[in-house]
Length: 465
Image (cartoon, rainbow, N blue to C red; front, side, top):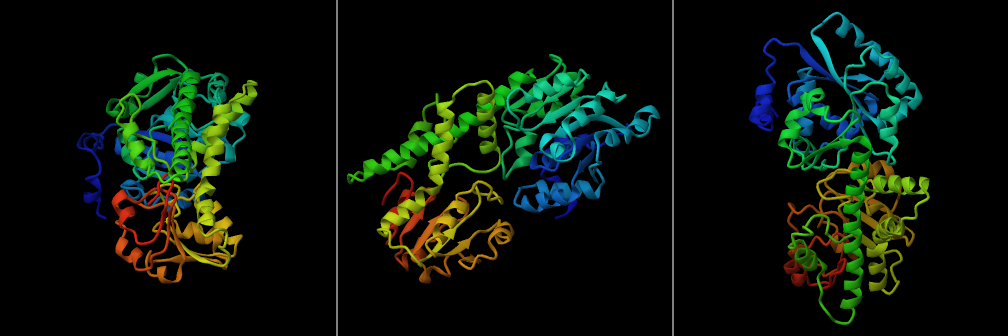
């Protein structure tokens, strides 16, 4: 992809900001190798800044390979690295060594002018002891520079960090807005831009480099860091609760349908979403939620409750429903065949934790495979993105096989499982009907018309044929 075509991804007002007009280059120093850190580096480069990104380079490259499904992000990353707008370097053994690299640029007035430090705690914790890096920043001569912290920690941890840091300009930015599959655009125009501030009302003038993101956000709020931490955890836990609630209602629908009714939980979700007081997001019944963020957020919130001796039964229920839901489609399969499932062969479509993702962390594919293999069932998996990840994990399993085509192996299978199917990829019902085998839809990916046109049987989550 050419540089000119890549520029089409960048809004016009941001492309204009790439021109420095002879001014000193603003250098943003980032420590991190997560998708959040990578996206921040690309967005800051798009806003006309030079970015020095420190990380474990090997892990960083693995992350980039894992997220090659992202729209725009890999191409922009490559372009900015080639232009040296983003410079990646191995993370030093201590924060003190990192900070020393930038003292001359401030004292001597070189062309590189550090404008902020941005620490992503997942990466920082893997290399630096917390007391060590806090002490290094406290002893730094650069106390006038803002320090941004991002990451998911137990409520109160980051506000405590801010108080331990002597500098006034400490900020917390949670990535509640980031959407996997469109990380770049979701950060460039965030749905909700939250900033926690150690010093009230200081982010506007101390974080001017990030002002375009604030201005393009659909909603913005700044408050003290503890409040933003609490809001972040509340937002993410609410989203998880919505998913688990709909999955609990889907189980009720299954019981209700056992009496020859035909409730479709997808239609119910759509109706609920029409109520303006509720809205339609995170109401999709299925095998639950996975990924890195929601499960980690719930675990951290549970830890916070335990620290304060608070029992949180609703949170426990949300986590229990989600864990159990990942095995539900297997139980439907077991009951369909009255337990006679040993040594069968099944096709599994999709493996990522959500459509358009290239990651399987927290996906239902893992418990499903383990349960199927416990019955000596041969599994043929068609997945368009995380093949390398699955082969690295299961390549030595004799019952595991990857397929390059979702339909080719169907004549030799006894059932189809749908774990993660992108809405953009059309299902060929005619090819499925040539075999008349049952479909076990853990994602509720099929439309009502497709379900009704199946020759074989169908078992979804809160849906029947």
